[in-house]
Image 1 (tube, rainbow, N blue to C red):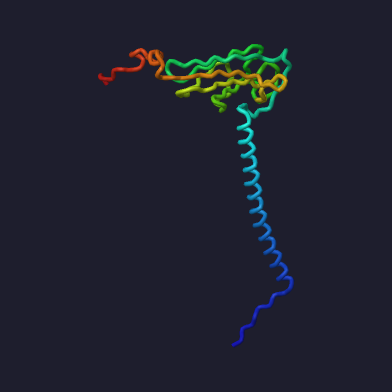
Image 2 (image 1 turned 120 degrees about the vertical axis):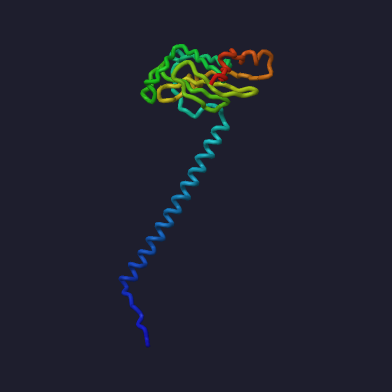
Length: 193
């Protein structure tokens, strides 16, 4: 018994070929797209890493102001008796304006960014902040004054910033006494519970 082979018309073969070509194109396009995205991501990461190693400053844009308009900043970092460190920013010709964040820049207004050992740890909307970190050895605390759009205030390309190096030694004389708490605050008698 002979079986008949189903014959296809040239139009059917052409449609089938087009469908195969289209599927191959889609798969290649998806693969190529992922490949480009991966290379682009790697390039972006290597650029960020290179930039980070070149400077310890943040990568914000600068908000250039004249020397006459430039705010001034001082930084006071002191160990807290209970934990961490108290940060005080003394700024002149500058007002903290949290309500203006992400808005238009106004000379003399904005917020601050706090960095510890080059890593941004907080955006500050007031002159006082408690950093709850602890460490042994030395760390650098740095503050930049930032405009509403987060750009760093600068004069002639120089960022307006201040830093303070802090050394912590828990073996230093008097250190334990500073952290001593009133026994009534720290311990409670729960024997009657």
